[in-house]
Image (cartoon, rainbow, N blue to C red; front, side, top):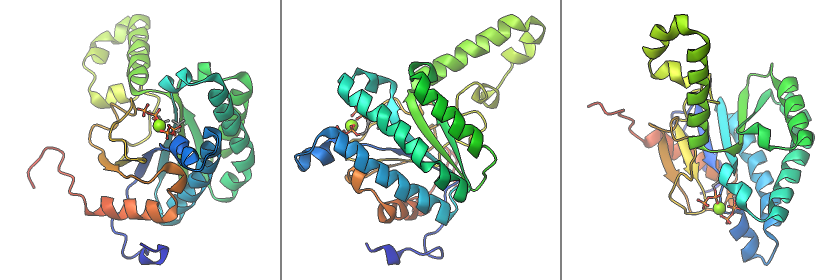
Length: 247
Ligand code: IPE
Ligand code: IPE
Ligand code: MG
């Protein structure tokens, strides 16, 4: 479907939070006889394209699964190439974030990242913190089970440190626990898209994705550009979200 098929008028209801499991970079490179890192580099272009489209169509949160806790188990050379790519991309994109009103946020097990990478992340997050057109979240060294565990540990610590508040803390509901997850303050994803034909969550947003619409596409991440993004928005607008109720 051509780009021009989609317009602000015909795309339908725009989700507040779009989340993407960016998968298939290695296969994209393999099909071309290139090194896997070439696929990751090309994937950055897709990030740019989707970010631009999200801003243009008024999506308020775009989150991207860039590196899972399990991805640390990949060959060191690939891990190094990915980390270098993240570093370079953040340095290069800062001016673009400022020009387009993009707040940039990295969520995940930050202690595992290098000091250099953490410094550029902090700088980017601080400088863009006042932007409010789009919040772009990159999940780095993230896993859903890790997130729930770190939340439970922080909750337990609060309980120990504030025994006077124990009763109210134990009576806490879902919203109260939400505040301990790394995504505190960010609305749950309306839709989770996974590229490359894999139909699994690979430990992504296990709690927050409880009622997300799921969309699986065969398109490999480096080929997922504006048209694909808008097509996903269109698909979302046709979904009927019932949240367990009868309509
Ligand atoms: C997604 O592409 C990027 C990361 C997981 C870091 P892959 O590298 O998983 O590509 P495939 O799945 O091997 O094709
Ligand atoms: C999931 O992709 C993680 C990211 C996209 C960052 P993987 O390629 O690591 O997932 P599996 O191994 O196919 O489940
Ligand atoms: Mg993969």
